[in-house]
Length: 369
Ligand code: NAD
Image (cartoon, rainbow, N blue to C red):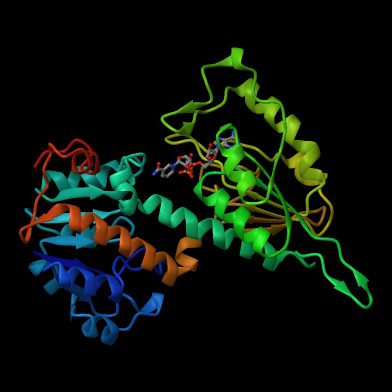
C-alpha cells in the first residue's frame, strides 16, 4: 500500500500529516510513503529529512495518481478534493459535521473517507489514534504560553534583593484535555492555578496537577439530567448558564489570567465570561479564549485569531490555530496517531476498511465501501 501526504492548503496551516520519524515507522511496516515536495517545510521538516527516512518526494499530481490513501491534517480545499479519484481513501480531521458537502461529494465519486474526529475516544485500543486529544494537548500548552507572553508581569513568585513579587493568579475554565495541559503549563511557569469544569470527575485531575478546583454551586439537578453524556459535558440550560456565569464572575475579577477551553460536542461553545465580568478585571489582565469560533466562544466578544485590548485594560485573545502555531510538536503527535491508525488498517500490505470493525466503522461515519 502507498500513502501520500500533500502540503496543507488551508491558509495559515503549518502542520503536516506525517513527519520523517513516522515515515520510517511506516516503511518498517511495509507501507510506501509519498510526500509532496515542500509539504513539511512550514513545520521545519525538509524534503531531505523525508527522503532519508525512506519517503519519495513528488509533485502533487504524481502523489494523487499513485497514492492509495491520502493523509491530511485538515479538510482539503476544493481543488485538491477534486484531484482525488475513485478507490482512493482520504484520511484526516475532516469534520464531516462542519463540512457535510465535502464528504458527500467525495463519497459520491467513490473516494472513501476516514474522519479522525469521529474516533470512539473512550475505546482504550483507539487511544493511540486520538488526534483530537493530541492536538488539544498542544493547544492547551500553547494557550498558557500565549497568555504568559501577553501578561506584563511575572507568573512565578520571585524573591530578589529588592523584594518579592506575588505569583500570577490563573483561572482555567473547562478542564478537558486542553484545559488540563493549560493548567500543567501555567503551573510549570509558577502561577497559582484555579480551575473549573462542570464534570465532577475533573476535580481529581485538576487537583493532581497541583491546582485548586473552584467550588461554585453545581447547576441545580432539577433543571436537567446528569451533567455528563458519554463522558462529555451536556449543554447547560439557559437558566443553568446564567447561574454559572453569576457564580464565576466574582472569581474572574480576582484573576490575572483566564484561559477558557469549554466545549460541548455538536453545540456552540458555552458563554462563560460576560462583558461585565471582563470589565471588572484589573488593567493588565489577560484572557485567552481557546473556544473562540466564528459563532462565538466562551468569552463575550472574542474572535478567532484576534487580540483586543479592551477599554478597561484587559487583553482579550481569541485563539486561532494554536496547534498550527506549534507546528512541529503538533505534526509529530498527529503523525503518531496516523501510524497507529495505519497499523490498525493495513493487513498483509493491503488497506482494509472493514465495516465490521468498531473503530473503522466509526471513522467512516457509517459509510460502507
Ligand atoms: P471538550 O473539548 O469537548 O470540552 C472541554 C471541556 O469543557 C470538557 O472537560 C467539558 O466538560 C468542559 N465544559 C463543557 N461545558 C462547560 C461549562 N459550561 N462550564 C465548564 N466547563 C465546561 O472535551 P475533551 O477535552 O475532548 O474531553 C472531554 C472528556 O473526554 C474528558 O473527560 C476527557 O478526559 C475525556 N476523554 C477521554 C478519552 C479516553 O478515554 N481515551 C480521550 C479523550 C478525552
